[in-house]
Length: 394
Ligand SMILES: NC(=O)c1ccc[n+]([C@@H]2O[C@H](COP(=O)([O-])OP(=O)(O)OC[C@H]3O[C@@H](n4cnc5c(N)ncnc54)[C@H](OP(=O)(O)O)[C@@H]3O)[C@@H](O)[C@H]2O)c1
Image (cartoon, rainbow, N blue to C red; front, side, top):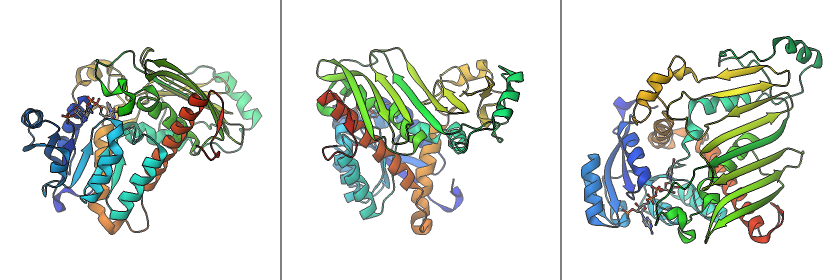
């Protein structure tokens, strides 16, 4: 993060007073270099109540009112998905930087317009997909670089002497290689988690499991592959007007395949498997570590050898400590939201000093591709048949 002594804090204004704001306001207030100066609601009373409860100086009625304030440098958009596009464009118009909740928008076209707007007025934008900022995600990025030529078969056979060892590994070294990627899978679900009236149960607000949770499972596939599939085929289970569950397959030009699942009617799942020819990475809590466990992941080698990983800052955190601090937003564990906010703060502070290097562009690409894939899954659900991504209608 940039040097705090030489900069005044980036002052965030919060749009919306929903459930997610409870956690993220605390994270904004406790991230070095960030502060929260105002919160806006459709209702003046709610704005004041939330300002008082969170120790925010000002609560204002109306989102536009907040955007016109001089004491706001950046906004955190915590509104239903159908409003992300409109309020990102309005924030750009007002010259404010943006932290926008997921899914970024309702369609890839909207995401393109949002990226165009932030580029045009030269403000910084980041979508609040916090798992991309967890330190173990950097490990996954490193491991994904080991997709080169297949391992020598003599060495692979020699490893069979060491079947099922389960030691904690030194994460600085990469003691295996994935080999060429073969299959990616990710499943994210939460069972009936939402109250009546929740925006997730309203299609016109961007509700439904495809956008709400498919954002994660599809995003994982994009993260691991770094590209778009050629073809997708999706099936949805409906609950009234909204999608309650989706399962889908994806096919890439070089025979890489992927399966994704997401749902509001299935037990809590947040796992992925990235399967290469020589090894696979498995993680059972990639969107956010389980509350009572350190963040964890495993690598299964073709030889049968199993490596178990805990990220460096959580080595030595026992389950009792983890359990005690699990619900404290600013505890030593799971800093992914604060790291995400710190990243945006750094970009804002660097201003034009970033020069040609624009670190946000890889996040834009990840977000846009994820939304392109979600569009394709929706098109496949609507048509009841496979959809090619280069077809003109997608
Ligand atoms: N990153 C994560 O881990 C995570 C977790 C949960 C949610 N999210 C995302 O964050 C966003 C908000 O989720 P949430 O769970 O906080 O939602 P929520 O509890 O339904 O709150 C949404 C807020 O938006 C405002 N709003 C404006 N127009 C609305 C309308 N027509 N209907 C409902 N609310 C309206 C409301 O605030 P006022 O009326 O006070 O203005 C409301 O409190 C979503 O995009 C969601 O996917 C992210």
